[in-house]
Amino acid sequence: MKDQMYMLAIDQGTTSSRAILFDRQGEIRGIAQKEFRQLYPKPGWVEHDAEEIWEVTRWVVDHLFESTGVRRDQVAGIGITNQRETTVVWDKDTGSPVYHAIVWQSRQTADICEDLKRRGLEKTIRDKTGLVVDAYFSGTKVKWILDHVEGAREKAERGELLFGTIDTWLLWKLTGGKVHATDFSNASRTLLFNIHTLDWDDELLEMLDVPRAMLPEVRPSSEVYGYTDEAAFGGARVPVAGMAGDQQAALFGQACFTPGMAKNTYGTGCFLLMHTGDRAVRSNHGLLTTVAWGIEGRVEYALEGSIFVAGAAIQWLRDGLEILQTARESEDRARRLKSNEGVYLVPAFVGLGAPYWDMEARGAIFGLTRGTTRDHLARAALESLAYQTRDVVAAMEQDAGIRLQQLNVDGGASLNDFLMQFQSDILNVTVKRPVVSETTALGAAYLAGLAVGYWNDRETIQENWAVAAEYRPQMAEEEREALYRGWRDAVSRTLSRREVKV
Ligand SMILES: Nc1ncnc2c1ncn2[C@@H]1O[C@H](COP(=O)(O)OP(=O)(O)O)[C@@H](O)[C@H]1O
Ligand SMILES: O=P(O)(O)OC[C@H](O)CO
Image 1 (cartoon, protein in one colour):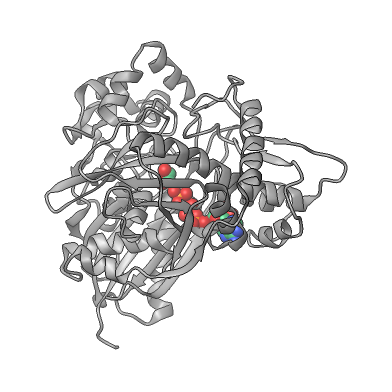
Image 2 (tube, rainbow, N blue to C red):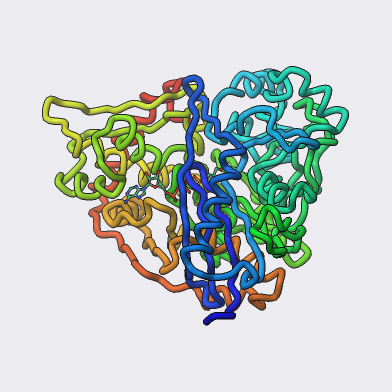
């Protein structure tokens, strides 16, 4: 309808930006997407150009309105969701970043982490932040930028530089430099934020030499942060009303609102989050405790297993080895084989995340013979997503003390039917993919829509959730366990410490 109102979600992911319009039923009414450059200045380093991220994001928003014919004044509100932890430091006056955005996957701060460990700070950090000491999180990346960019530390101390994760950077840009804020979910990934007191933590700031003056204000995930600047948003003034890290937004979009409900997103990495209600459950098995969102005057928590390389392994086969034309082709290739024939790929390209947390491990392929073909590599890469997920689910079941009943899935690689059936088989759990697989963007739209009254409550959101595909376990127990043993053996030979320590 000509004057119908919509919610706009901006989903700024690791490899692409998307802009999506949703209607009141939570259905997609238009989508635009564009990839941007990945910069690999040294082995194990991953960077983005923050200005390019903004330009690409603007482009997808413009393109969305052009392609749908929807007007900007038909947007009731904007929700932002983002690749988390990726760190931008910019000049408050000029708005220019002082260094590339250091991406969550980047390992360039491994030495800073080792130093924190040597100083015996792991427990304090774990207790306050729910995180582990790893180059993944923003805190060491901010320190790295302040240590390596000439004059940056002095400027930061004088309050002339600002830090933000990508949500904060986009909010700043969209509001024409007026609002410098983040939400609880993104703040909880920085290593600087106390998830119990819900404030930046002076002891952590001191540990990492990060001046408080450069930090954004931390706010709930569902509220009006400010309005778009007309020059930044095609002449329209629209409320930016929701923000959340992409994995938390996906948990919201999957309507996982009760403790024990879990989702796994198969994108560049794989992120499995289980809602734990108002309890910040501490992990003893290598998972993270994280804020799910702040809403309705309180925060809710989640347990998370973060897998660094998932769909990126398929991308590597496509772009690095050039043995696939498209990511989708991996499915046909995998199906040409009856089994993996003993070939395992451990995609530790940037170390291993949960539950191993090994910054020094690097990728490996095992079981090669003269008969190995690109089909084996495609299958091994796809299977690695499922095995890594099982590693995380095993840890989660121990930490939460419950058996997973069902796994809701989303993300680019969740459209791969071979992978989803294999996932169900390896976990021995039913896997469900919703009709709207863009749950990350949907979650951001919901958070923003609740703040501006586009949707009334979470019950409406639950009612909107509908299943598109369901995968039930079909594999015999013996085969499942034999395959998984093979994976565990491959991982143990990949770890820098040469032992599986879970
Ligand atoms: N059919 C497929 N089979 C396997 N992997 C896929 C498929 N389609 C996309 N992917 C992988 O999924 C990722 C893209 O998913 P997406 O959710 O857009 O990720 P992100 O938000 O991290 O950029 C890429 O790494 C790509 O290789
Ligand atoms: O961009 P994605 O979807 O791979 O998500 C990245 C995560 O937020 C990193 O923590």
